[in-house]
Length: 96
Ligand SMILES: [Zn+2]
Image (cartoon, rainbow, N blue to C red):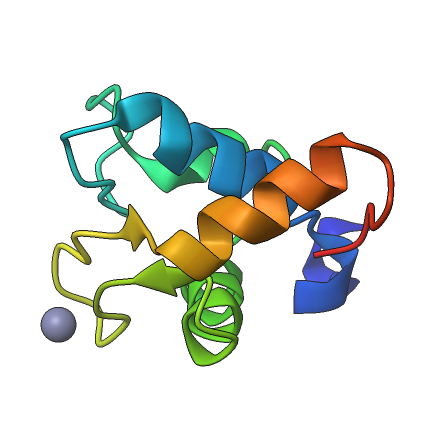
């Protein structure tokens, strides 16, 4: 059940892919009406708290830039994130 899910249950690669696809734009985390919300890159029904903590995890790993305080977020892929993504897509490291 989704309520018991943890950050590690949410795949990070789709989030990185999503941010990469936004290119010049930043991702937000809260507004489902926006096409650039990272919520869309997570499993359906992921609680907001979990969305934020997942983003925080990616942030701490240096894979994304942005703010997880609960504001708009403005997440973007870092060069380390892009490298991680390329590696994951090449099948060497599927876990993010
Ligand atoms: Zn903030």
